[in-house]
Structure formats: structure tokens, C-alpha cells
Image (cartoon, rainbow, N blue to C red; front, side, top):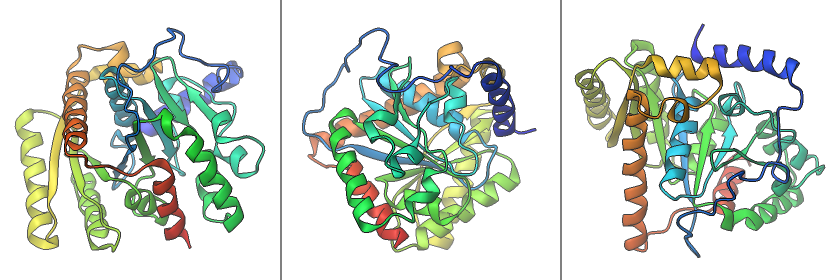
Length: 314
């Protein structure tokens, strides 16, 4: 049983026993009443797609813990769970959102209504089956959706899109709509092959965006570096594409323990090897944000990102 299957099994049992586990935006305010340490007035939102060539490599778990660490650094972070096949960000947070993207598409709720504020200072938009339905919206519905996104634009500095695994049209559209994509792999040969396959498809697309690589579940620093070097070399030699190494995460029992406890490992085990690795990655990403702001280099914003998604769906 891989990590994703274990998460799904846990949440099914929890939801049967605790149907009121979820809280939505209005009901679940930050219990500490914290304001963001940094308010980036007028700056555009950075949109980052976290993706993988195959499932079970820890993509969603990484997304959640990265979001928490970025939030600790003063960034206002929102996760959009776009994993149509196995959406489990809510499971990792240990919550059960009452509303999701489907309610917006059916015009039963607004986007503001479906934003869940977690206890970790990270906002979440759960998708349900809504990601699939995005492709079928009329022009009028798309315009209304975009206008609602504009209303929450100032709430977010960083949007992390947890895409589905593989090379489906949905996954590729969200990668294309981002400022850059983070590809998660593990040392397992099939994971490496699928990661390279994803990089190949993205690099050959007319909507190609920069890609970063993170090696998860590494047994050693040396192994992670060797794996990353191999993928980077192959991508440069055969695809004429530069993939930047963004770090690695150690294989750590603390991660499995956090899955069983339904608490992010950066919270449950903040001094663990895995948590320290994610902290380093978050600091690197946040430092890059600061440099981009200093160079007046703007990223996408929420509305522009979803306009790109809709354009690709046409």
C-alpha cells in the first residue's frame, strides 16, 4: 500500500466517525488571529504547480508541508487541490471541507465560501470533482469564475497547485498556468522514468514553463544528488531543457507517523530530518520570491493562471 492509499483509507474511517470534522472559511478562522508577517501590497501571486510522473511519491504530503513552512516565513499561502484522481490534501491536514470547487461551478457557493482556513495559517480550496467540470464551463460561467477569483487575489502571495500525477490534460494545463513546476520523484526506477517522461512532455509543449526537481524519500544526500544529476543531465542532453535541482527530502519514519496521526510532519515532528529538508526548500523558494520582487519581476496572479487553464481547455 503506497502513501496515497494509506491516506485515503485513514480519512474514510475518520469521516464515518466524525462527519463534522470539516470547517469552511467563515467557520474556521485562524484561531490565533494572526495576520501575515509580510503583506505584499500590490504584488502578484506566485503560482507554483507541484506535480509528479506517478502517484505514491509523496507529492501531496510535500505540498502541505511546504505550504506550512512558507507560511512560517511570512507568506500568505493557499493550496488548490487539483488532483482529480486522488485529492488528499484535506486528509493530510486532518480536515473535511464542507464545500469544494464543485459547489462554485454549480453556483451554489462563491469561491470565498469554499476557502478553508486551516489551523496552520494555510488556506485550502478543495476541488472534489470540480477540476474535471472546469473544462465544460460556458464562456459566461468562466467569466464569472474569474471575477470571483479576482475578489480573493489580495489574500494570497503564493498559490500551490497540487496537480494530479502523470501527463493528463488537466495536469499539463495547471503546470502550463504556473510560474514554474516542481517535479517530485523518488529514487525508485519507475518513479524516475515517469518523472523524465513528464519533463519531456512539458518541455516539448508550446506552453513550457521552468521545472524544478525534488528527490523525495532519499536514503542519503549522496543518493539524492546522484539521482538529481542524472535527471538534469538527461533532460539537458536529450530534451535541450534545463531542470534545476531544488533539494531533496530524506526517507524518514516521522513522515509515516504523521500520516497515521493525520498531522503534517513539519508540525508533528518539526525537528525531523524530513521537516528540516522541507524548511531548506521553503527558504530557497522564499528567497527567490524576495529577489524577484527586488527585480520587479512579477509572477502570474490567480485570474491570469486560470485564464490560461481555460484557454488550454478550449
